[in-house]
Image (tube, rainbow, N blue to C red; front, side, top):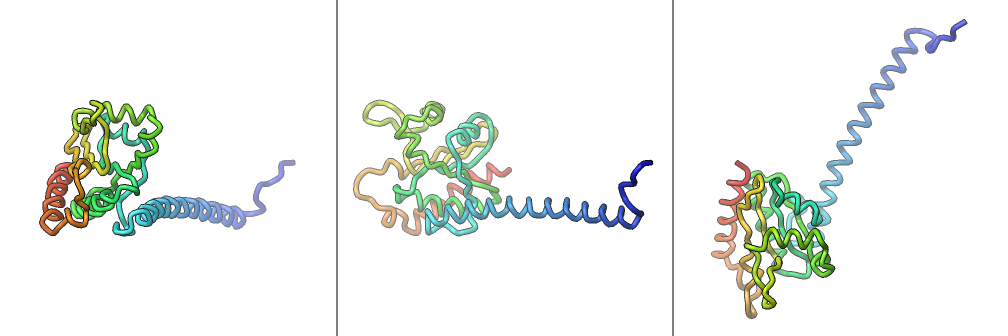
Length: 197
């Protein structure tokens, strides 16, 4: 004699409804988890760079992420590290303009340890960007902080490292007067508008 799985139709419908509720909860909880991870990255970035809004667009990237952008994908990348005080200024201005034009995320690549350790992927990035990167006294090219890189479908729209090579005692507080902030944001806006087209 076969044993019935359900005693009656009411029990079967009850189990089916509970099953569907569980599936729905997994989907909802999964979406909340993804949103929390994004928020966590934004808050973590804001804690590192206090002048950047907590709802920023930054996601932390590693050398492989950046190399993928350079090798034919699209992306906005900020090269920098917390010890470089110029980075925080560019992080703030880039985030503000990117939100204004509709960029969905900005990769933040803290390349300091990769550069210090001569990471192979970092070296490949430098080789790809050698025509843009400044040449050091030793005759080799290297990426300096801060640098903004915007790539669309593998085409480099901008490699912007203006303040990474400033000589002398100029500080960001002095350099970024009202006119310079406006000029920097206008340049970033024109490039990012082309990027989001």
